[in-house]
Length: 265
Image 1 (cartoon, helix red, strand yellow):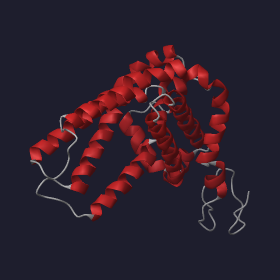
Image 2 (tube, rainbow, N blue to C red; image 1 turned 90 degrees about the horizontal axis):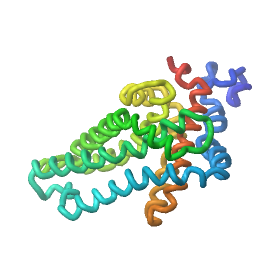
Image 3 (cartoon, helix red, strand yellow; image 1 turned 180 degrees about the horizontal axis):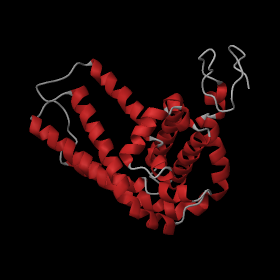
Image 4 (tube, one colour; image 1 turned 30 degrees about the horizontal axis):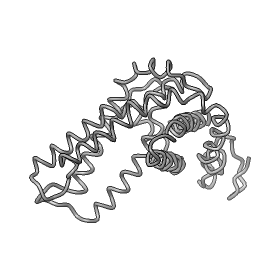
């Protein structure tokens, strides 16, 4: 393989040309997240019905409780994070919301354990229940994520009677989207490399920047797909959630196959 910019010889897994410093086609073609997603769908589609019992568990034990909690918090005014209240009330609302959601969100990550244990595209209910032993590990990951969101909310939106610069609202949007790209491979890295949540998050942040846009694209597609499924009375989630788990697993495995971590040591 040769560089299209300077015609220098490249190794099969070179992300950058050592001669001219330009990015090679490996990232946009070989490591295309869209191409990986289509390959995952083609393998998952014939087997999607076999995943319904396992997918129903996180929907019933994770998604529904989160929605019920948000509804209850809104009914009691706990989702009110506006500036028109006391500082203590806003901080209490942030704490209650983040702590409450953190109880149920790890259940949506449990399937990464059985998904990474086998190379296929089916997860059984038995596998899902056995994976609940991973709950504490994913709880720590969710708590770290919740702390991140609380901090950026306080920085970008400020406290009552001490508001921040309006431009920081745009910074908040950027940080949320960047978090999606960094967070996406973390659950798989925890399983594949036997890392804790903090180690996996640091590894994703430090080593995966060359494919950050590809990770963001994959994450954005999966988030939008699952939001639409949630809006359609949750039923399509039994199809879209397993696809999301396998899609993330397959793409992270592809990155590890291309030695993306060794590339930046």
